[in-house]
Amino acid sequence: MPITFRKSFRIFPGVRLNINRRSWSVTVGGKSGLRHTISSTGRRTTSMDLPGPLGYRHTTTRRSRGDH
Image 1 (cartoon, rainbow, N blue to C red):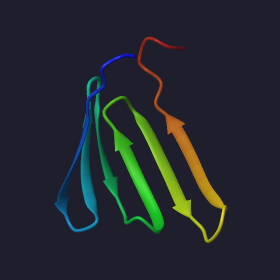
Image 2: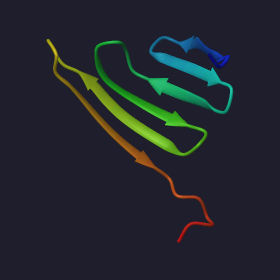
Image 3: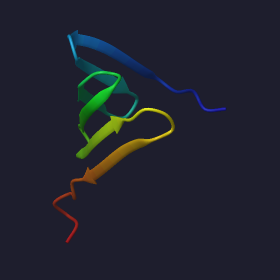
């Protein structure tokens, strides 16, 4: 089993700094409701938890300059 590293810090109410071995990200929003996450790798995720088994997630990834 590989060794993983992941840590999350609350820097303001409703704002979290998430750090793992390869990148970091900032999440704005709470546990329930709308959340926006912006990662150092260029990934941007918008998600929302709805009551029951329902949920919504939309992810966009920035292309690097070398990709055309």
